[in-house]
Image 1 (cartoon, rainbow, N blue to C red):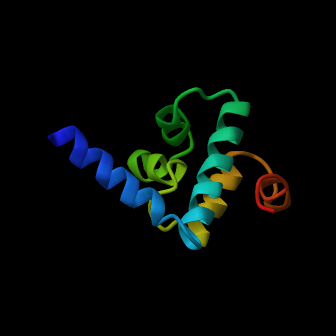
Image 2: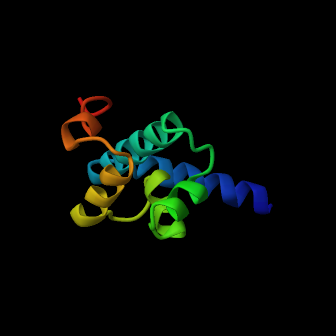
Image 3: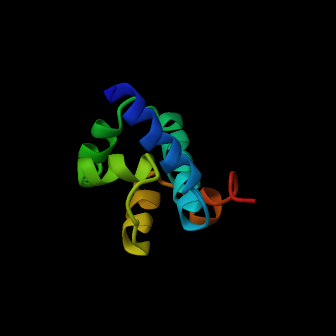
Length: 92
């Protein structure tokens, strides 16, 4: 019974992915891609090495949470790229 309930919740959650939620998912996907490209297989290591809150950064990569512009700039700086480079892929 519990498995059916979990599937129902996931299904309902998937249907709610519109507007801003989709944008957060895109941001998270891009952060993950760039982190891996930088050589970090673990988001925890990346967050720790760049003085970012580990749990918060993990949520950002999953597309959860409302990342502030200030925190987005910190992530982009940690990735050692420009804002233009960050948004150059995956946001059309």
